[in-house]
Every structure is written in structure tokens, then in C-alpha cells.
Length: 75
Image 1 (cartoon, rainbow, N blue to C red):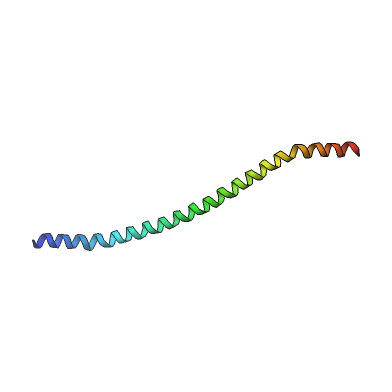
Image 2 (tube, one colour):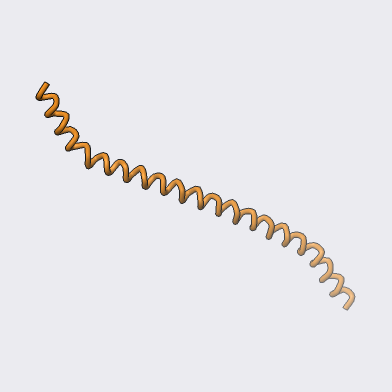
């Protein structure tokens, strides 16, 4: 039983710190990914807002062009 106990202790002494390091790295990566997700969400919202403004502009462009042509015709 002494050899089994010694082997178990060596494995625990080696693996436990390694597993803690891996867990710490995973936690760090999860935090980084959360930050990227939040920034991506903000950028998505900004892009969608910009697209919405462009759509509004195209709806106004034709009537504005008609008004401009009337002004030019009256000058």
C-alpha cells in the first residue's frame, strides 16, 4: 500500500497546482470573452442605429430633391 499511497500523493502534488492554474486561466478567459461580448453588443447597436439613420435619410432624399428642384426653378 505504501507505493500506491506515494504515487497518489505525487500525482496530487503535481496535478492539484496544475489544475488550479488551468482553472485560473479559464476564469480569466471567461472574463475576457464577456468583455468582448459586451463591446460587440455595443458596436452592433451602434451599427444598427446608423443603418436606421441611413434608411431615414433615403426616405427624405427624394422629397428633398423635389423641393430643391422647385427652388432652382423659381430662381
